[in-house]
Image: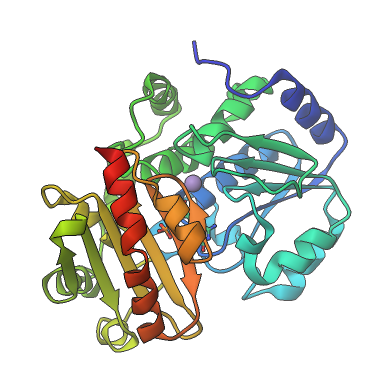
Length: 344
Ligand code: 5GP
Ligand code: MN
């Protein structure tokens, strides 16, 4: 038996809203990852199976690594199809907001989403939800939104309507947000759920191979180059920094998502506690950070990088000036020292 995580009142609210709606839009955060897309498609497949019209609208395009997911071709990225995405949101009688809890996380879609008059249901696992949704299912202790979607569907008595396609998408999100069950993955419930998903026909070995371990040679070279040439270690801070400039990205024909997992690599070095990765995009510096134990990567991102996230995995954005970004990074040193002290 799974522990009951979602409150009975949340379940009642969702059940009622689902009964009253036919056209449902499911959306997630910009630069969607395996959990954002996996939870969205897993929910969409299951809602289609009970006769709802369910469409996934994303702020921008999913990464190449998720091309194999069932239903990925039906996803509507707002950046590619703004009018269609707008129409879907305007016509929807219910919107699910998955894997984000602040409106700015949907980027250019923000105004449309805020303006949509239908009810909204948030399902998410980040700290500190903004109260923009009518129903807020927020559980930061859960390792992925996908696992929350599975729990929600079970509580709605829709377990039998989760087919192999939905199970594959849900499994993908659970896998990617835990680094293939290597962190945030000590909850025994995860393995009960995996067992149920395997019974539904999920091929976990194939999903791992396709989503997490299939790279172009350029991607492999980009990662190797970043570690060999662009990683700086600050031993006294138990911190690593990787900076990739636009030239570096161009050299390896960078596509969004190609650097997935890179920021985790320095934490494999003995005694390393904090890893920071700065990527020079055309309009911003993207900040991605990881930490171990109770080192608050999320608070540093909130305080210095206009962002947030989880205790051990957080990100943010800075204006497109790399020197200023490096200065900002250096200005976090006292905070890093503070969190290191608290840790010991
Ligand atoms: P990643 O480093 O993989 O881009 O993101 C790690 C975590 O940090 C994700 O769970 C994501 O929610 C959060 N995150 C990444 N970028 C941002 C950001 O710009 N703002 C906020 N609030 N969270 C972010
Ligand atoms: Mn997630």
